[in-house]
Length: 422
Ligand code: HAM
Image (cartoon, rainbow, N blue to C red; front, top):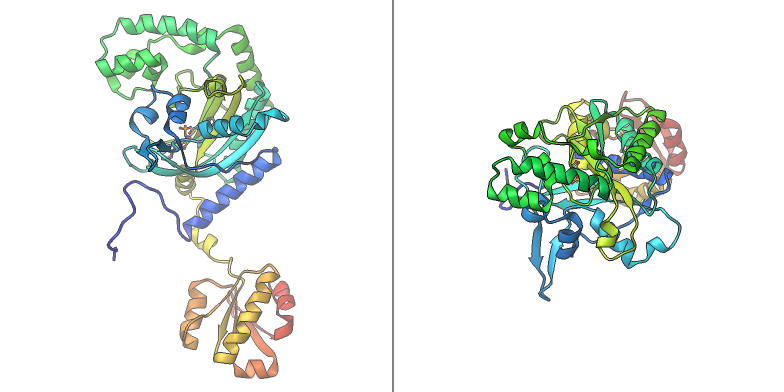
């Protein structure tokens, strides 16, 4: 039965047992990031609209079509964050985080918002885990960032995905390519909207999904063929570093990322079983972003991984066993019978939880049968029934639910008994 209210269209939501998977993915990414010396940055979910129009870029779909922009009560234009990098750079500048040791290494996770047409794997509120390493321009750092994403995917068990990399070059590479690309595009009859897009950023046309444009672009000059010797050397170093870590990749010279700030290394992780929304994560280097937001001229690199799509990818590879994640995390369920037992159960559950176990008890006015059913549904590993006779004898039967095996334990030594039972 559905209630009167529904969540807004196209948002992703997580509740048990799926939320356990969601949380464990974040935990894995956090541990891998911490091990590489990245630390948490927690930022507002809304920022000045201009941060995104400047940072993400006016030629992008994200800025022109997908932002949730609103005026607050003070008449300021604010926007729900469509991505994380612009906010991180804003915070680094504002709080002078770039005055210390470089690179500044940060990670973040949370909800992001884009008013896209909802479909499987594409949501209006979605979740990302991201990292940014700011202040050092070194292909080995690019490799580190890519390797963190790769080991997270691999550690989660994902296999059917591909890492695609390219280089978007430096200013001189892009200027040389731009000239040739514009010459090529001048020969084609483009509609007005596409023309104005191309005028803002000609690379955007590589992103066009229309069949006829894609066919034309088969012959377009590729940025990869216009890399300056410095950009080409960095790209080669990145590849050697990836190879030395045993990370396989394919070069995709047609990749253009959906955000305007990218320069140099760009990458995407594509999962083969997700259909149209196959990007489970992507990122790259951004040379001019910090300067354009009013900070020092420091380069940075980072990624954003789509947590919703990672869950879909895990499901598609048969790696999500909900029964497994649900069972086994409740170590003990206590079924109290009568008022004195209920009170005693409160202190026992408290003691067990403090000892590091997961414990719960039957609340409300339940029959023994109803409480046992609850224990079963919760997939408790052990159950203890507590009534007057147990209180009087200070002893109770600890029942292991997997095989029904029972041991008699004194109520004061439950923690020790649980330790040996589990
Ligand atoms: P992005 O490629 O726009 O990059 O998004 C990163 C990931 O977020 C995508 O690969 C995808 O998995 C997920 N994602 C994006 N939009 C949606 C959506 N509507 N529904 C579900 N998942 C989605 C960025 O956001 C950059 N800030 C990444 C970055 C960090 N680059 C440098 N540093």
